[in-house]
Amino acid sequence: MFHSARLKLTTWYLLIIMFISAFFSILIFHEVSLELERGFRRVELRHHAQDLGLHLPRRFSLRKEDLRPELQDIAPRFLFVDDLEDAKHALIFRLFMVNGIILVVSAVASYVMAGKTLAPIERAMEEQKRFVADASHELRTPLTALKTSIEVALRDKRLSRKQAKNVLKDNLNDIDHLTELSQKLLHLSRLQQGVNPNFSKVNLSKVIKNSVMKIKPLAKEKQIEIKTDLTSCEIKAQPEQIQEMLTLFLDNAIKYTPQKGKVFVSLTKQKKQAVIKIRDTGIGISEDHLPRIYDRFYRIDSARVKDKVDGFGLGLSLAKKIIKAHKGTVKVQSKVGKGTTFTITLPL
Ligand code: ADP
Image (tube, rainbow, N blue to C red; front, side, top):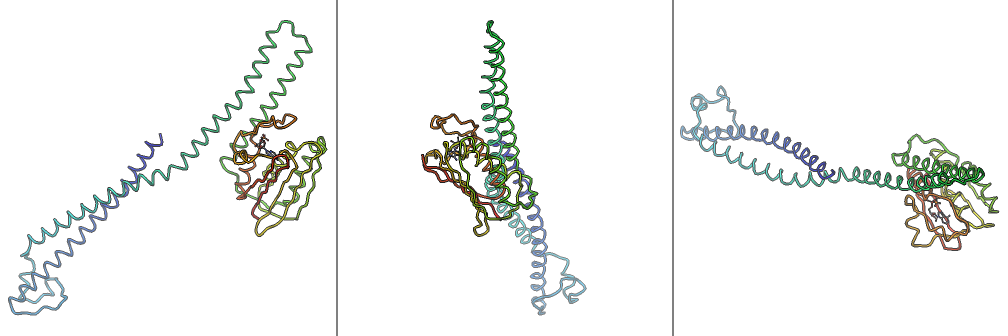
């Protein structure tokens, strides 16, 4: 599909270039022909003036009424008409040659340019296709599990009321899980299309405090202490997105930190950046996994965590997209068994 689009675009580029080139060639031919005719006529008149023993200045008007009477009857005639025609033919030949070269060079250039023009569209389409494939794969697995559990329950003739209730409870959990997944997917797809650029002034320390408050009940369950050290600072951003991004990092910090661990959140100003650090004393991430943690649906084997940790592998991918939309950066440092630090910078 993209190859034929590239060829079509190349043809259009080429047509435009050749139209412009042909237009200017005709213009050049017209102007140069006029100039040649004038030049030839001057030579002719000078030639006759010499025969008559007259001297003509370097520049003189060709208008009949401006010429000396002795030369006036010669002016309308053309003596070197064949030479003039030859010169015009040579000019046409040269213009054709130049147009031929332009055709070849611009065909190559147009093909390259068409490729460059279409490359981001092709990448976006590929990304979209991968997204749809990933999303349908992720949705299919829990849906199949849900269907199987309902079918098994229906087939069981001795299913008691209590057992049926338990099955329904599990199904409800699965549906909640699916709803959360589809919401995250929808959010991700919206972010993929870009964030509304109408940013407002955001008190970052306040947003961080809110996110910490939100996550505190989870931390309390695991007896994890959250310490904050926040400098007051303002940025231009979408407050809901920033809050969500921070919650995603904090949620992970709690999820991947064992009981009685610690989480530190700091906010400082450095040059023209607000720097947020979220450090935990959790299980850490090994070096070979680090480059892939922001990939969609990427999850590190949860066998390394004592209690099974819920997740879709979408959190960091979402967070990174939000940071990118705010022209910020995110870096991670981690040591297995010691903890992880995410450093987020956002322009002030
Ligand atoms: P998930 O829903 O699995 O948490 P994320 O995209 O948020 O998905 O994270 C991707 C993976 O990165 C997680 O599965 C986890 O293994 C790892 N990870 C993220 N944050 C941390 C952290 N603070 N400590 C240890 N591992 C982490």
